[in-house]
Structure formats: structure tokens, C-alpha cells
Length: 81
Image (cartoon, rainbow, N blue to C red; front, side):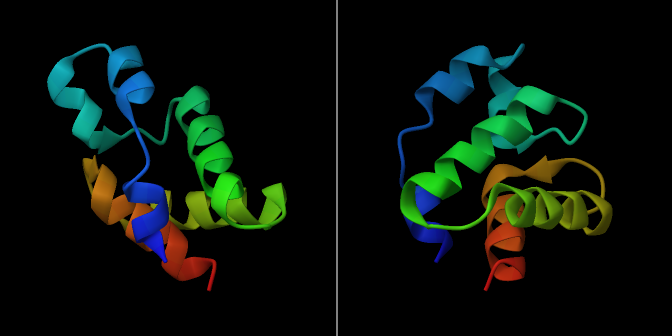
């Protein structure tokens, strides 16, 4: 399930991050990143925005430290199953 989202083009996200190295990590403190992920997920799955945001918040609380983008998206998608 996360493959559709992870295989999407993320260059606009990568370019918006402050440092190139940061582009591989999801920041739970940046609202634009949450908005970006919500739109990516909704592009492939007909899920309510509130449900996606709840899953993101849950993963922000359970994935420790820096949140590698691939692991974080996998966490969010597993909560949306």
C-alpha cells in the first residue's frame, strides 16, 4: 500500500526542504509537510483527510527521533489499513 505513495515523484518536496539531507526525513513540526503527505495519499486512495491526519499524528508519536520518509510513510499507511 505505501508503494504507490513512495513511488510518486517527491522532487517538489525535496526542493522545499531547507537542507538536501533533510529531504529524506519527515518533520512532524512542519505543517506544510503534513499537508503534502495528505495530498499524496489522497491522490491514490479515497480516504477522509481527518483519518489521514490522525494516522500521521499517531506515527509522529510512535516513530522515534528523525523520521525517515520511507519508514514514516509505511507507518502512516499501515495505520490507514
